[in-house]
Length: 307
Image (cartoon, one colour):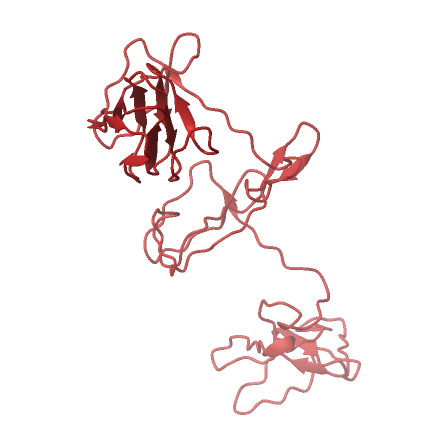
């Protein structure tokens, strides 16, 4: 825009003389200002608006229709609305503020529409974090290659006095336990217990006193295998090793003492690793190794069941 200060208004037809910056004094109706024209009539009446270029008075330029010509310019000297500092330059001056609108009910825009930035009643801007090209704020089962915005939070728990960072049980081994969240098991009391179907999740059931209701059921019992035999005065291994063994019971059904070894060794009277079974007594074997048996004075029968 051509910048200048309007210094005078020359009114042709006024009785009093008018003086314009840079022009001769004594202008009057009989001594109008010298206006250069080309093929246009010299004005003899009315009001003529003029400006200054800082030194001399200048007529304001118009187009052929008499409309004022305004030059906006460009760049830092432009009359266009823009910031006063280029991007990446050192900041000076005052910031240009941005604004939004508060709506108790947020608007719903359609494709291609322009919208106002939305803010709450305290002036905070509403934002929604979502995946790239997503039409919903969030979803489940997001692939590891998704262009989603991942965030890292450092959560804390209150220990009654201060706040501590949450730690996993592995990180808390052999420590004082700071940062380990406490967990409590909750249940629900129902006068009529629910009935679930296969694959459904359920709520732990408690009684009216808050005690957890538990139903104890017995697993199917093993069929068992008879390992009965006769112990002689020479050590034998009537019961072989069995990696799948759960238990083995042996009763001395004879009249003489029996010695047994349950760790794969050879049974012998009063020897290390051997144990005594008196007549009528029953013992339980809790190893999966071979069992060696020997009678002290004469052959003696025994009864045994393995499961």
